[in-house]
Amino acid sequence: MTLLQTLEARLSAALEKAIGEPTAPNLSPAADLRFGDYQSNTAMVMAKRLKTNPRALAQQILDALDVTDIATTSIAGPGFINFTILPEAYAAHAESLLKDPLLGAPQPGEGKTIVVDFSAPNVAKPMHVGHIRSTIIGDSLCRIARFLGYSVIADNHIGDWGTQFGMILHGWKTLLNHDALAADPIKELVRVYRQVNASTKEDPTVLDTCKAELVALQAGDPENLAIWQQCIDVSKLGLQKIYDRLDVKFDHWLGESFYNDMLPGLVDEFLENGLARESNGAVCVFTDDSKAPGDDPFKVHKEDGWTDNPAIIRKADGGFLYATTDLATISYRIDEWNADQIWYVVGVPQQLHFRQIFEAAERWGKHGDFRHIAFGSILGEDRKLMKTRSGDNVGLTDVLEEAVERAAKAIAEKNPDLTGDEAAEVAEIVGIGAVKFAELSQHRLTDYVFAWDRMLALQGDTAPYLQYSSVRIRSIFRKLDAAFDPTSAKISLEKPEEIHLARLLARFGEILPLVLEDHRPNLLANYLLELARAFHSYFEACPVLKSEEPLRSSRLALCALTSSVLEKGLGLLGIRCPERM
Ligand code: ARG
Image 1 (cartoon, rainbow, N blue to C red):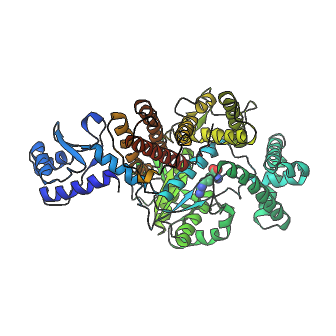
Image 2 (image 1 turned 135 degrees about the vertical axis):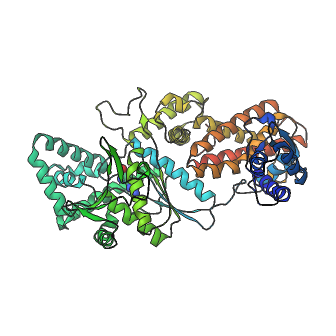
Image 3 (image 1 turned 90 degrees about the horizontal axis):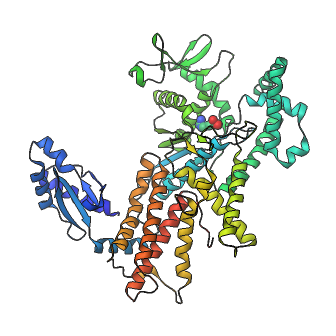
C-alpha cells in the first residue's frame, strides 16, 4: 500500500466516525512542502454542506483520526488538514519497498483488459516522425498499464488496405527495381509510390490506371492480390526491424484488411437496425439529436448554423471507409478479446473520426471505455513541421540513426575508455533513450521542438542525465568490498536531503496511477528527473561509503532503492540503462 492509500483509509474511517456517513477524503500531495506532505480539503467541502465552521469540523475529524504512528497533523488556513509524514514512517516504508518487486505500485488493473491501438503506420509509406509519437507513447502506456496489473493487448492496426495500393500496384508492374526491393523494401516501395504519384499530376490518365488497379484488387484479382500480399510481407519485415531497435512489442498486427470480410454485414446491420440510412446513394450514420449541437460529433457549425455532419460507412460506389473498418475493429476487440477499454494513440487531426465512431459503437451496443489519446506535432528547430531538405517527411529510421551517431560522439568525448562493441551498445541505448525521453517528457498535446543538443545533454532534463545518474549509483556498489543485501538493512533518516529522497521514493507508486488517469507519461518522466536531482543533493550532503555503520548500510540501502526506482521508471518509459557510460 502507498502512504497515500494508508492515509486515505485512515482518514476515511475518521470521516465516517465524525460525520456519520462515508465521505471522500480528498487527499493530495501538498503543493508546498512547508505545509506538510499531504493535504485534505474535505473539512471545508463538508462544512459548506453541513453549514458548520470548517476549522471546528477539521478538529472533530482530527479527534477521530488515528495516524500518530505515521504522521503529524495540523489545521491550516480556512480548514485544510495537513499531514507531515514522520521520518520513521518514510524509513519503514523505504524498507518495505526494498522487499517489494512492484516498488509500491498498486494493482488497480486486476481483472481488466485494455486494448492499446498504437503505431499503426500505413504500409508502403515510410513511418515518419509523427508515427514515432504514437509508437513511443503507446509503448510506454502499455508497459505502465501492465505494471499496474491490467491485461494489455498491444495491437498494431496497420493501414494495409488504403487507396495508396492503386499507385503501388501500377508502380510495381511498371517501375519496380527488384534488387532495390530486396535491399530495402520500404525505401523501394516509397520510391515507386512517389514516382507514380508525381506522374499522375503530369498525366491524368495514369490516375485512371491506378484506380483501375485498385478496383481490381478490391474485387479479388489474383495477380493484384499476390502483389499486395508481397508488399505487406516485405513492409512488415522492415517495420519489425524498427520496432526491434525501439524495443517495442505487439501482441497482434491486425491491420485494416483483416476486417474486410466483416464490412458488408456490418453496413447491412446498421441499415436494418436504423443506425444508418441512405443519403445520395451512400450509407451514413447521422445525429440522433440526443446531444447539444456543440457536443454532437454528427453536427458541424457552418455560416448558416448547425448542419449535419454524418459519418459515411459505405460510399455510393459500394466502397467501404476508414470509419467502417474502425467500427468492425471495435466490435472484434469487444466480442473476441473482452476489452473493457480501448486506447487509440493517434494524432489530434483524427479527433472527429474517433468521436464519431465511439458514439456509433455505443449506439450499436458495443459498450466500452474508449479513449482517443491524441498528441500534437513534432517541429524542427525552425519551429515548422519537421521536414527534410527536399521537403519530405523525415523518416523514423533516419532519426534513430542520427540519434545513435550523435550519442556515440558525445560518449567518445566523455569516456574514451569505452570502445568497440560496448561503446556501440551504449551509444544505441543512449541515443534511442534520448529520443524517447524527449517525447515522453512533454505533455503529449503540445507541439515539441526536436532539438538534438538539448535531448542529448548530460546535464538537463534528458534521458542521458537519468542514465548517467543510474550509472553513478551502480558505481557506488562496484566499490564495495563485500556483498551488500539492501533488503535486510535498517534505514534511518536524519538529514533533510535523505528524508526528501525517501519521500520521493515513496511517491513512485502514487504517480503511476495518475499517469494512466489522463495518459500522460510525462508525469513519470518528470518525477524521475526530480528523483535524480534529489539523489544528487542527497549524495552531496550525506556521505555514504565514508560513514560509519549502521548509517552506512542505511544510506547504501537508500542508494539501492533509488537505483531500482530509477531503472524501473525508465524501463516503464521503454528506456534502458547502460552498465557504464
Ligand atoms: N493508419 C492510421 C494513420 O497512419 C492510424 C490508425 C489508427 N488506428 C485506428 N484504429 N484508426 O493515420
